[in-house]
Image (cartoon, rainbow, N blue to C red):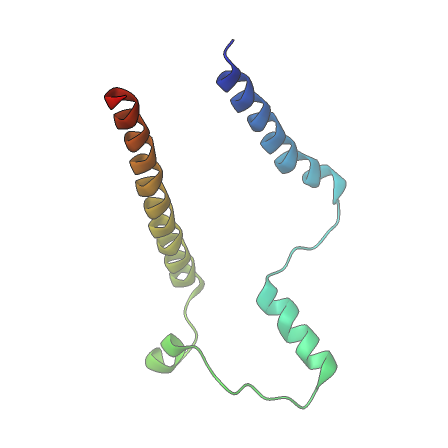
Length: 103
């Protein structure tokens, strides 16, 4: 087995442990978003504070976005980011192949 295959297998095992171990180690833990945690801390520090700004889309639409639309926007953002990363990784791989071919 080549060194690259061993490295890939080792990294896959590490990733699997990183995903599986917290499921068993953190039983009963509650996971929440950073927005919720931030507002809780602000309320503890200054209970009389008021919201100064509202999200732009909430101002345009006149209310809060439905959860499905928020999920759609998050997935769209993720897809764009993955596309950009994949594009540049592909360029680096092709550049390396061309350098090896020309060498």
